[in-house]
Figure 1 (tube, one colour):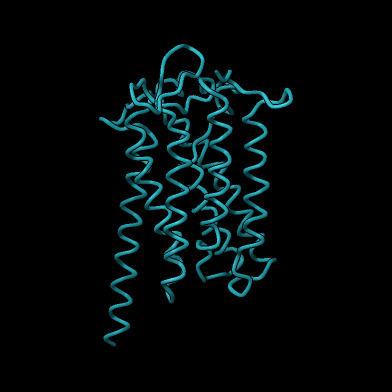
Figure 2 (cartoon, one colour; figure 1 turned 120 degrees about the horizontal axis):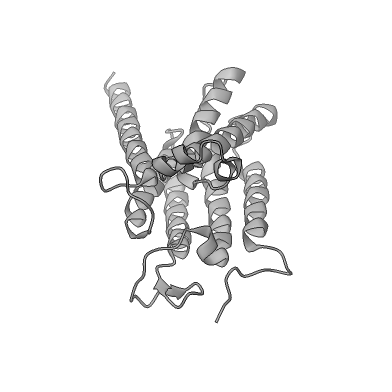
Length: 248
């Protein structure tokens, strides 16, 4: 039986895999980005915008997980700096990227270059979440499924971290296949990535024991739902524009 947290050479798994996620994700971006689409100096500014936006977004959405608790701890620095969310990071990173592009005067889409790095980084990071166990608060509710994992308290729970890794693997396989088939639509892969991942988070958080203060939704699901509506609108808008171009 595995002990949680599963320390590696005495180092906490979250620290190891979160560091690897950032390092490997950035290296994948530099290696796979479309070098003809955006020069390296502007690409680095986009990365800076994404990083800052993700840091702010992940924190803001975390504070909305339990609004009452956040208000009660508004002057508790430890509470305010701990915790973050991937969905908040993605949406905040999107805002950060668009802000950076406006600052440097870049108008072309850059999202497709982030699909593989983000997927790889998130998958690596979720390994750290899984190995951390109960302390990470990313596990699911108790289950009788064969996939149930005992994180150390004798209760079998949904290993939602592993579900997410599997989903991202399937999603990136589909998107890379689509990339070879489609052309002429910059940004489509990133839009589909965000749409797919946000839908996954909307559904998977129903089996997470987190507060659901927004009717039947938690903070992640509410943000995911807003993001889904945005990307459905954006993709529909792009399709309409392409049809107009064809018939023009």
